[in-house]
Image: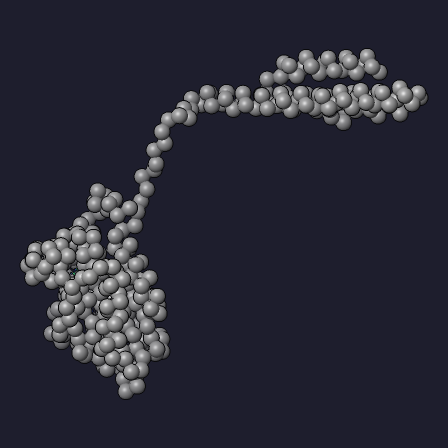
Amino acid sequence: MKKRLNDFHNAFLSEIEAALTPEQVRDIEIKYLGKKSDIHLMLKNIGTIENPDEKREMGKIINSTRNEIQKIIEEKREIVEKKSIERKISENHMDWSMPVFSADEGSLHPVTIVQREVESILTGMGFSIVDGPEMETEYYNFEALNIPKFHPARDMQDTFHLVNNMIMRTHTSNCQSRSMEKMKPPLKIIAPGKCFRYEALDASHETAFYQIEGLLVDENINISNLIAVMKILLSEIFRRDVKVRLRPGYFPFVEPGFELDINCLICGGAGCRTCKNSGWLELMPCGMVHPNVLRYGNIDPEKYNGFAFGLGLTRLVMMRYGIADIRLLNGGDLRFLKQFR
Ligand code: FA5
C-alpha cells in the first residue's frame, strides 16, 4: 500500500505542477481528493490491515499525504487565479492606471433649489404643500378670487387663452379656492408652481415664471400674524439683513392688501435694469383674505378669516444668487446652469 501511495503522490505532483488554469486545478482536486480518488479508497481499505501497528502507521501516512495534497492544491489555486486575472486584464487591454473621468452629472435647477428651501421653512411652520393645475378655468383663476368677468383687474394679468376655453393660470392663487373647497379651517397651505402671463419680456419679467402661494385660514387671524410669517421666511431665506418695505397694494382677493418689496440686491438699491432703476423689486404681495373669497370657498367669513401671499419665486432666486436677468433661468444654457451644482 505504501508503494501505491507513493505512486499516487508522485502522479499528483507532476499533474499539479503542469496545471495552468483554475479549472485544471479543480479537476485535479476532484481526481486526487474526491470520493472516487485512490486515496479515498486506500483510507476505506485500511480496515483490512490486520496488524494494529501497521494499521495505525498506514492511517497516519495516508492522512498526512492527503493534508499535504490539499495544501499544495490551495497554494496552486491562488497562483493560477491571480495569473488568470492578469491574463484577462492584458487580453482586454485595460489600463488600470488611467485617470477616471466622472460622467457629466446633472444638477438641480436654481429655482428647484430655492423652492425646496422655502418649502422646508414653511412646512416647518406647519404649512402643508398642495398642487394646482397650470391649465385652469377662468373661474378658479379669476371669479373665485373676486375678479368677475369684466373687472378691470383682469387686465393686470393677461394670459394665454386655449382653444378648449381654458387659460394658462396667471398665478398660484388659483389654489386658494381649490384648497378651501377640499379642506376645512384651520387651513395652512402653500402651493408652489409655474405661472404664465402674456408679458413684454425684460430683465425681471418672463412669460413663464414660478410663484409660491401661501394661505392660512382660521379664527382670529390678523395682520401681525401675516407679518410674522413674512419676517421669519425672509430672514431664513437670506440669512442676513435685507431691507424690505411694505406698502399698500391692490388685489381684489385681499383686503387690506400689501406689496412687499425687497431692496434690489443686484445694485444694492442704487438702481439698475433689474429693478427698473427704482432700487426695489416687487417680491411678495400679500394681504388679508377677502370675505368674498372665503364665501366662494364655502367658508363662513363671520367665523373665519385669514391671510394669503404670493411669493415671486423666480425673482427670489434672482436676488438670492445675484442673477441680473430673469431670461437666464429659462434659457437652458448649461454654462449658466452648471454653476449651481
Ligand atoms: C399675484 O400674482 C397675486 N396672485 C399675489 C397675491 C397672492 C396677492 C395672495 C395677495 C394674496 P403679482 O401679479 O404681483 O400678484 O405677482 C406676484 C409676484 O410674482 C410678483 O411680486 C413677482 O415677484 C412675480 N411675478 C409677477 N409677474 C412676473 C413675471 N412676468 N415674471 C416674473 N415674476 C413675476
